Image (cartoon, rainbow, N blue to C red):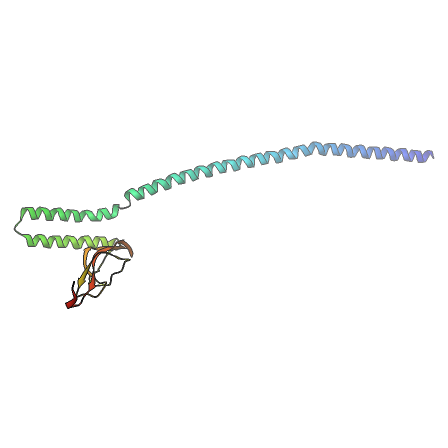
Length: 195
C-alpha cells in the first residue's frame, strides 16, 4: 500500500503540480488579458477620435457649402440679368442718338420715324435672342390663357369672341406666358341689329 500511497502521493503531487501549473498559467493569462482589452480600448478611442475629426470636417464643409450656395444665389439674383442688360444698352444708345437727331433736325420727321422703326426691330430681335416672342392676336379667337379682355365691341366684320384690337401686346418667354394680350373682343351683330 505504501507504493500505492506513494503513487497516490506522486499522483497528488503531480495533480498538485498540474493544478498549480494551470493556476500559474491562468494567472499569466489573466495578466495578459487586461493588456488585450487595453489595446482594444486604445484602438477604439483612436477610432472614435478619428470619427469625431471626420465629423467636424464634414460639418465645416457643409457650413462652407451653405455659405457658398447663399452667396451664389445672391449673385445670381443681383447679376443674373447682366447679359441681357448689356445687350439692351446699344438700344438705349440708339434711342439717345435718335432723340438727339430729332432735336437737331426737327423738320426731318420721316427719318426720325424710320430710325425709331429700326430701333424697335433691334429691340425685338434682342428679346427674341433671350426667348421672348410676341403674341399676335388681332383676328384670332379669344383665348383666356393668352388674352385679357378689356372690353367687348360690337362688330359686323368679326365673328363672336374674335380679338378686334390690341391695347397692349402680349409676350411669351420660352413658351410660357410672360404677359397676356390686353384686347377688345368682338360681339358679332348683323347690319340691321346694331344697338
